[in-house]
Length: 148
Image (cartoon, rainbow, N blue to C red):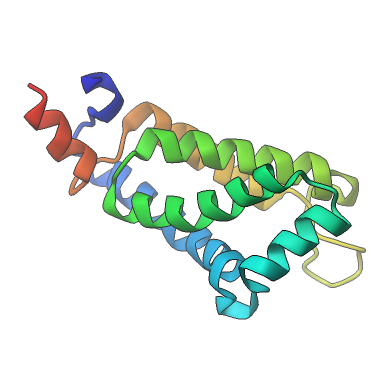
């Protein structure tokens, strides 16, 4: 159990953790609460289940994973669990939605949708956190110290 929470108190892991949480949080809160131009919980569930044909339990996990996972990541709580969740969410987004649009984001509005470069960056950042843990100022670090 200690290895799950253990983290070296590095600034780099903390910056990575806070940066990733700050980028994913608006996406999650848009899906959950309708903030930042999102559709909110019921709108997102409807879109995922009816238009994209994603099973409701999986759609629910994506919404909760992005929103509550981002909050947990801000705190440095369950960092490795959230990191794995983000990897799975982003792989799903790539293969269900974005792969047909190519690699690059739709910077000039000339494609039908967005590419998957953003998702690969999230995956890379998440895998890095999976190895490093939450870093400095993380709840995980406090828990690991208590488990000594």
